[in-house]
View 1 (tube, rainbow, N blue to C red):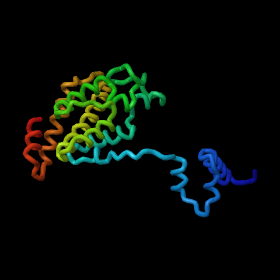
View 2: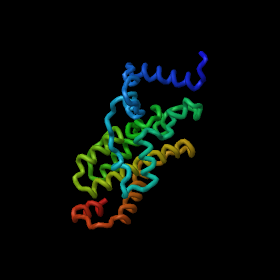
View 3: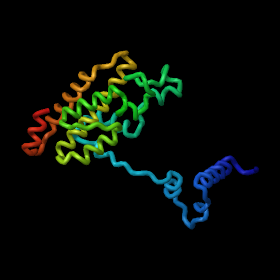
View 4: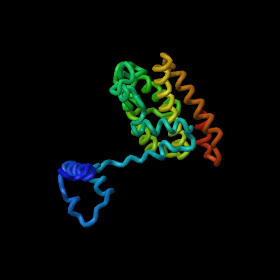
Length: 213
């Protein structure tokens, strides 16, 4: 009872760590490492390597940032802001029928599904994935050409950026651009960006594929 507030706080933290981990073995070890206790409290998690998907030189910088935030589920969606008293509801700004969370925007919303499907068909793929990370992983697995893979990564980051932009337009301007309009913007941005950055010689088949887009 006579201890200072700092000592009491340390004791509470020690008790919380013991209860959380279900063991006091971390207190009896000869050496203590904060990193080891952090890993013990965090538990085991699957490591997702998405840096190659986002930090791709063919992707526009502003597209990379939004995609990076989306992959970490850090975008300020309505479902995240509404409990803080920001906004009138938590419904998706694009379809208005489901809570606006990151998983819904990329790619469970009807608007984002249509955009993603159209842009993948433009690239020559007949596939669809219901989540952003699974779409990236599919491209990494089935795109054998390095150039084609990087262009596709750039296209997907562009899709994420323009879907988020369309969502913001629906909230701040009260209008949602058509799927065709969004897809055309993605196509223009990617083709313009990649055309400027192609430095090394690419194969004839890759050149024909890119010219056909």
